[in-house]
Image 1 (cartoon, one colour):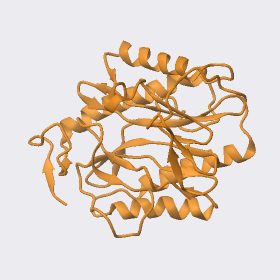
Image 2: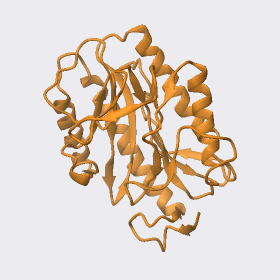
Image 3: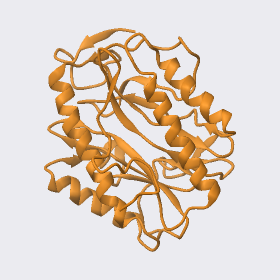
Image 4: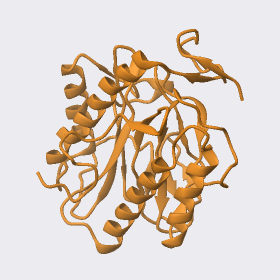
Length: 274
């Protein structure tokens, strides 16, 4: 795998991993904070009876009010500003007229683009009171995210990240989705390297200071297999079991990692105290 500095790299996926400097890290702090602020803001609106398209509208208006645009809108034909995935939807759920019901769990995935930089993050939410199994899945998924992040440092590998996530999830009798993965991010929405959420320690791509990517495990209560619906976006569990996901944008530092998308209000996982 080749690496190049982001100063000389074009703003597209060339298949070469970009190594970013201090200016890029500062730009990602701002874009990441806006993503986190958007997810903080929407928390109070996630209640039974609201539609997912209303949640999409609120997020889009908030992002625009901060001088940014919504990265997903019109990306490869995607019709909305955010992705909202409910219950057995794994990812890329398209907001629409469906009203949330008491006990629904959902992932809201936002990517504001601020000054050309993509801040990519998602969290789980609960409309009303979660069922015991649903809350357990949310807790496990968040722990998977953080365990994957905690191994990040120069000299570690993408396989180390995947193993940390897979080992914990399967130890809790859950499964890790294979069909989707984390990715490089920065001035490009989806860049190399791919960050698999399963793997073998020491295998994969070596991490180097300056790399920026997402870690975003999707964890299912049932089997890991998914299918994509006829809209060509919405991915669901094949066995209709519940699925959950959390996502952070991460920078590899000289000694470890920096999370760009932490919640300023401490609302990193439900239940949220608002």
